[in-house]
Image 1 (cartoon, rainbow, N blue to C red):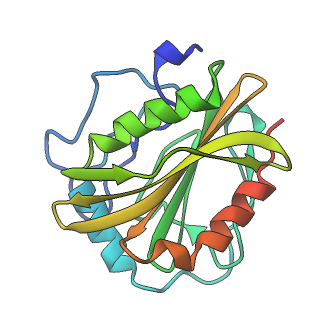
Image 2 (cartoon, rainbow, N blue to C red; image 1 turned 90 degrees about the vertical axis):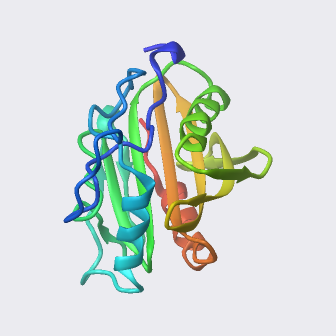
Image 3 (spheres, rainbow, N blue to C red; image 1 turned 45 degrees about the vertical axis):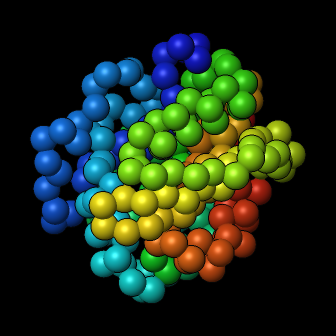
Length: 202
């Protein structure tokens, strides 16, 4: 699909359980490439993050194969976050120490920069205030070029910070978004970097 079809990942997914999203949380204004599920409201997501505290489940989640054969290998101690953020097919959500990371993949023939721009635009709309650092470059999956941005913002129930990464390779677009309560992302940054490095993109 072309860039005009929409971003790979637009912070979509079933609302954190057992909370029920309000009517207005569903967005159908733009088609998406990867996920055809319900928009999550940041108020509910923030409350779910707070409920996580510092605990994760036992063990480490097994590697997960996404659309287009992309494989995500969770870092040690990261477990499935489907109980609070079920992101649907083509994506996986993982949690540890109050942070949640989502990886999504699907067909995409635009550039990584264009994909990141689309995702940031969608991300910005979810905050009452939003700030981001300049776009950076990195490599993922053993050397594939990617772009990233660090961000922070205010939702109804508090401040969040995170990182958004986008890569486009051989007709596949991959997006990673990591979100945590403000001040907590750096505790898991090493794990995030490890998971990006171990990505497998055919």
